[in-house]
Length: 115
Image (cartoon, rainbow, N blue to C red; front, side):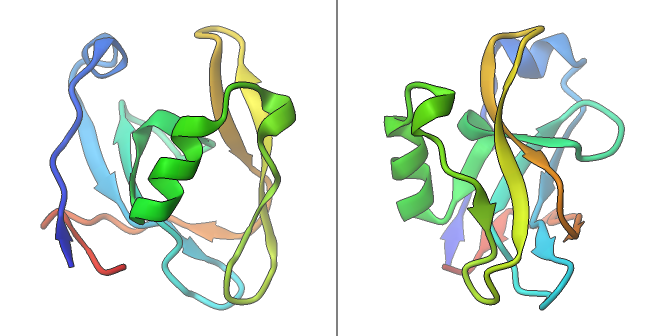
């Protein structure tokens, strides 16, 4: 288990520091996918690469992605269901994964993620 700390950056501040820790899960098989910091209110429409906090191997892999062309579609590692597609959020010119498949948003207030 990893105890995760919240990132504070210009995007967090721009959204009024309204931060939630989430553990999105696959809507098909219910397995936990990753640990994510969502800044701002509203639904989870996209996952910004720089806000993925765990698992460690995914965080490291996302740090290496420099363009949309190098980012693959995101599938559930357990059941292979397509969950998200690569995108660039043009308003901020940020790489993200746009959710297109069944993803459940679960709050994770304790900041712990099991890898």
